[in-house]
Image (spheres, rainbow, N blue to C red):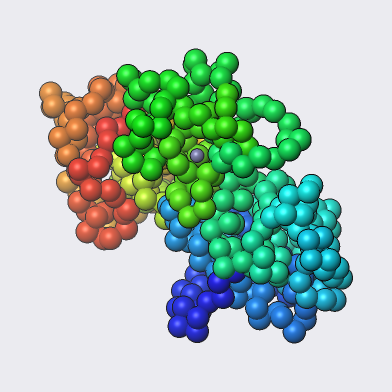
Length: 461
Ligand SMILES: [Zn+2]
């Protein structure tokens, strides 16, 4: 493990201080190393240590901070840091270090870490039950358990818990081991692992008999030879194909790319492995943290009332809002709902928003993990005073009785799409809603992507 220099530690501490809150009650000796939201709606990484004595407490937190920093900055991980929380729980061990049958070291530690697990020198075994029991007691909201072993020899392991030694490459090793424990990825290297059960169930390997169809076919450019000779490689990670050699074997099992973080330390995840990681993150994080106003809130019949969702700071979020089942062309986290513009009668109306992560890192999302929908009710009440003294048609909105212009389906970005699917009068009114974009942008309340990256609103998901 590279221990942080004083300057780097100060930067990290300042950054973490800006974003962090307190560890939950009951967590004991704990530090919040990265906090972006409440546990439960985030991917909660929880780090414990083994072989750190009470006197080595500061070293443990420094090592854990280096791991947190890599989760915040390393490729693939960095894109999803806005949905990560990283917590560290200190567990003192009676003695420092780890067992090692190669050297005869026999150390009394909290979780009994040992090198040479299953006869492989670099593989570290720990008491899985011990680690999970400790984390369950102190931080039951955990998603991803990790264990740092305070011994400098190169080593680690995946499985239920991502384990890594304090070797100088420890951070890079952890980025790899999380591929196993988080996304169920296979090793793509060919170093023998005697007795390892055969198979290709992991998302990043395919046996010879399973090359057609290839499980990662959305990533393969038509015309790429399958199997793919390594001479076809144009870069470390391209083209995606089926390269022989993976999962501790040199023959009859194939990997997606010439290289990958699951094949060689310090590389990036190949696109297929990156997709599996992103879907793993998506399974654990919320895309919608909160909705506002509360369900059943009464709003004035005239003037825009903001309806909003609070979302993580991910780069590629897309918003599709609908009112009474009619999809608007609005794309932002705040909908300025003006019942007069939409010709909404007094009484309850249903509003829903679908938030979708449009990341280019995923090409296949069969379980719909990249989107989330919230639906709630607002009650239009004409006895309430108008918002901001807006007139009957709303500021800049089309008068409610105006016929929709022929080019209603083109929004202000020139994005020509199908009709919103509602009655013609509603479609015209929704065009008026789009005209309110400038009003709310001026108030700085919206998160909107540039026109160049904007996609057409969709009718359904
Ligand atoms: Zn890979």
